[in-house]
Image (tube, rainbow, N blue to C red; front, top):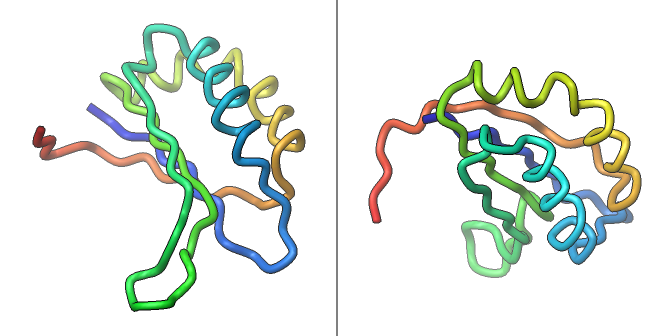
Length: 106
């Protein structure tokens, strides 16, 4: 299984509409990726590691897929529409990482 993480770094004066991201953007991403997206999570940063420290990221999502080829095949025809929607909720440049999930505990 792979996890596609999209992280939005905290930035003074940056705009991020958490409600739009949670309620509109991510459900649209799930819809466009179809069965390639097993599930996803959305996080809103609340704090850093030290007491009183700000969160390093204002938001992030994690999209879980069976394999990298599954994700790439589903993303390719939809990337333009997905990326075009970013301006509707933020002016932050996202950071992307694709990871292999090696342990998953319930």
